[in-house]
Length: 161
Image (cartoon, rainbow, N blue to C red; front, side):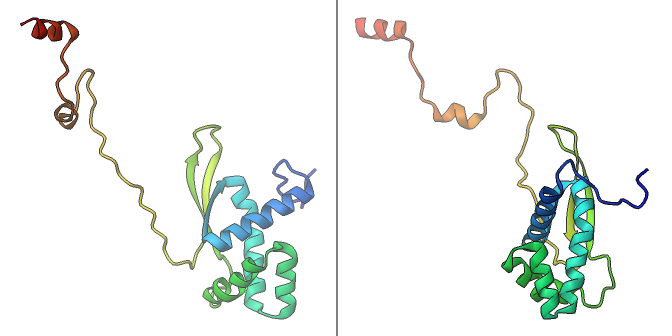
């Protein structure tokens, strides 16, 4: 029975899993929002929240503990200087998981994980005009740009005249 064994294994060894989660948290700190599978997002959330709690403490011991887990000085600096002060008045729940649906290739559920207190990053995709394309129909601009081509038979008849 799996009573009180809440580690999600993610199909990896313990060392690989720790490295993966540490890199995911560092990416979350750097980019404010990451797109990953739902299982990984749910596994990253507790570690990310623990790191923010360490950042709120602000002590040298907390900084060294965060560095031991994350292994990236720049991420720890940004965590302690930017992210933790934003969440100073919050008692928990520093991250949000937004489900995006299934990935096209393998139908894996995909989600965003992001900071709740982050400044809103709005990414609007470039909308291209998609009109109905009919078989044999050409755009008007393409027809005007091409000069008229004469067939070889018409060229020979022009030369003979």
